Length: 406
Image (cartoon, rainbow, N blue to C red; front, top):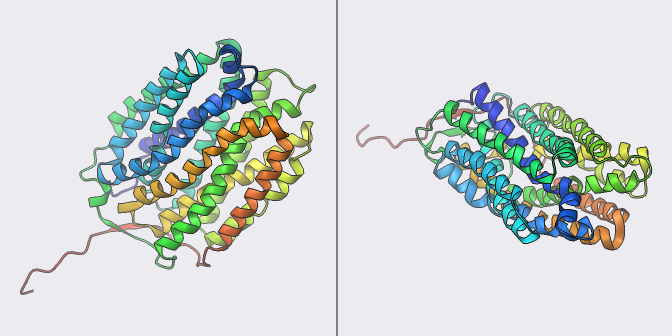
């Protein structure tokens, strides 16, 4: 699989990204209904039971990336599709909070496969990797939007268990199709050809350090917003909109609009230096969080769209750095190491979200996110200045030793 994947395979890989993010956010969207069903006084008290999913989403990335490079990315993606479907069906039949926590944690383990495996599989041999990453990011965040709107309607009309069971069937069907159309790998990526790439980047150790610090901060913001936006909207729209289906639709519109930022960023990544664009995007985050801290109603809604645009817009950069500076033979492992740390740490956001909001409110949370955004700016500023990217990567043969006497 030295060439880029076919369009049907690429479509399924993008759909997998949507499934990954959708499944992780269904719990956060349905948490109020689940809490009422399980006898909790409020949603904040149930929210920490979902931390296992996000913890395994990060910690599982390390072994997933290693297996992707050394065993095969196709096999790992099959494990992703079928594992996500089975674990979500298990969530749908849980009877109490601890059973729910266990099933969500299992789902988090399978969800950890996608980013270190699916994205390197998608961009392998891509002529315009920035655009490929941008479209993939759009698909992932449309999954967030789908979680908001479909969960709201399913909870209202079919109950919260259906909100987990229906998407599970979709994941299993996608797995069956992927098994039929994705070509088998003749050898795992670690044994494949070296990819020619730009050589003007920083040493791998420095790149990983800066990338991981920025990724931790960005992942914290992503988890805090995507897990908290539904309840923030519910609180700040009190007296304006009450219906959960309408609120879910409004939230889905936020994510749909913000998701298209990644396509624009992908196009820019293919043409301009990474550091310059990355700094411009993350510098806008803190002012928007501060402005939203005490906003209500439609003003809050407009600011929510704005800060989600710059949060989603920052996502493609770390994958773009890996594509630009890391050989394909080890991309899944490098991506897995980065995700292991960043998502492992940022999973604490899910655990802290409910207690922090309950104790101090959303205003304090938004001010805290502004502080995290400043850390992101400082980390990105440490990236070295590099030139514009070269056109596309190609596969080149591994160097071979010459026989004696030649």
